Image (cartoon, rainbow, N blue to C red; front, side, top):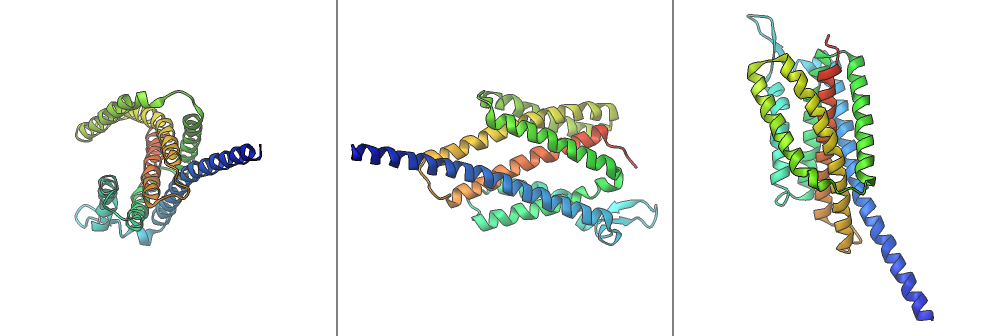
Length: 252
């Protein structure tokens, strides 16, 4: 009888410990996402409201007087894309400190590049769209975490939609149709809203997989996975915000 009670209590302890590992992984993902968002917001605010710092990004053309990006401005605009590819394809080769450093650098440079939107849109509309994006993201993250519906079956559809959105945006960059851009913005909000729920459920299952492996302490690989997962959520939120801004933002 005593042996049976001991075994039952031991199994209960293991279940609790495994649950804490899964929750710790999930918490780490959101922690790093919020760190990245905070860093990007701070960088965007500092560069967007300080003329001295903005001079490092934009310079006036002596001939026309129009503003054009400096070398650092181009770096801020295009380097984040390279850093995302580095994190995505170099996950197995980069050490955890290196991956974390690239992630922090990416968030900072993205924030610097976002400072341009403060020059194009009013502060009130930026704040309103940011708040709306936070609300949409929060609702979909909650649904993704709590729903019993398997969202993985929607993955291929969302990927096709995402690729189509990227191609359409690239084509419209040369066409310059405002109406088409407006329509694509609605699709952008819809796709990244759905991707938020999809990614959150995927991250939840990754945590459960770590739990099933019996890891009582998160390994280096699990911590690296948390960084990449945080990146995916960061991109979901950022794109929801940017597409909302294109739809409802008031230009100066």
